[in-house]
Length: 253
Image (cartoon, rainbow, N blue to C red):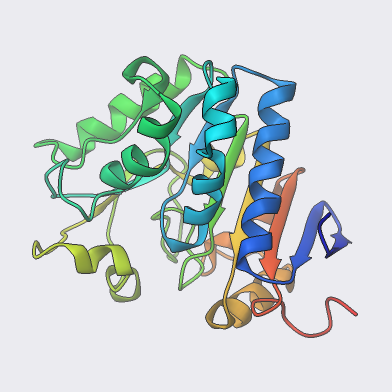
């Protein structure tokens, strides 16, 4: 049994859990329920420390043995550009380790940016063309970036709707994943805001005291390109799961 508080704010549902473990279990349960409802689900996945435990729970032996992910397809949300695909800092290595290999996701059910493409703009076009051949993403799992970014959609005067080469801010380049490589990362590759907002359902995971002010800014419901996560208010089916440390005061008793 989960101990949490659910708050409805317009079209955004906020689930407040006691800690990161409960957050992760709640998120994993939501994914498993979605797969049971639609076995050939298309999942778009972010990487990073926040969703890691969720992915570990999804890859638990009971889920692997049941083979319930046998028809699920995975789309990589973003990637650090200019790195070899086997560089430990890549989103590729992360997703292979935490999701694709444990759940047996083969190449036919996996769409991913090539981090080391010699022509990154053409790589983005390849991803967009591939997305146009499949149904909309069923469930997109996101994290809340240190400056409000989603994927590598960074704060700017305008936001790109489709896969693109992203100029990364210094705060983004300080992400813990970048500490795993000695290579200077020149750019990012990411799905655009339209790709994200076209997903049927969005799950935003937020944990830790360092994310509290960011979540408070999101819940202020002011939409601005200077805080890309605010565009989630334009989506009809967003669930935010946060822990108590990330929960800003005034949104839960």
